[in-house]
Length: 173
Image (tube, rainbow, N blue to C red; front, top):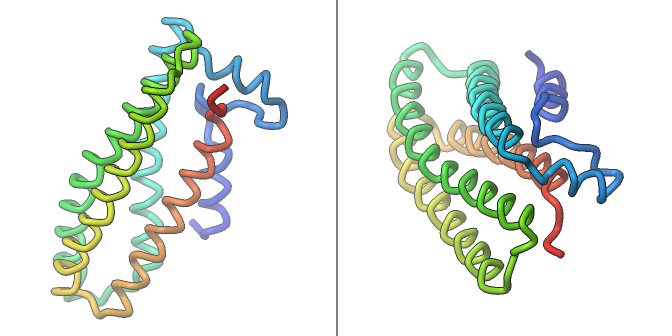
């Protein structure tokens, strides 16, 4: 799949979380789940996370240009990297769910806002530490240029996901 096609899949994948961002009121309403919608949203989130992991894998397979002798070792390290990052990404999704529940109840307090900000900082720090740790492991099988390419691809995919989420999550009122 070409990058352009992958981007389109990412931007237009279906999810109960996605809403029309042109109208902030309808976006806020779509973000307010009832219990049945919340369960459906959780299932959709997990489906979309699986799609994202699959799309990342496909893109990396196409764009990394690995030599045959690098292939097995790279994917072994990448598997560990994905597992480590999933732990961090779980924190992001938990933060989104907490915010959605508080937003729905009209209870996004100053204390909660500070807690969300602090958690966001912790998450960013954890991601950076994992990139450094795994960067060293990847250098055992990749050249520095290949490692830079890998992190460029990772960064692009992370930005697309972040942009999509930012469009869907209403601002604190």
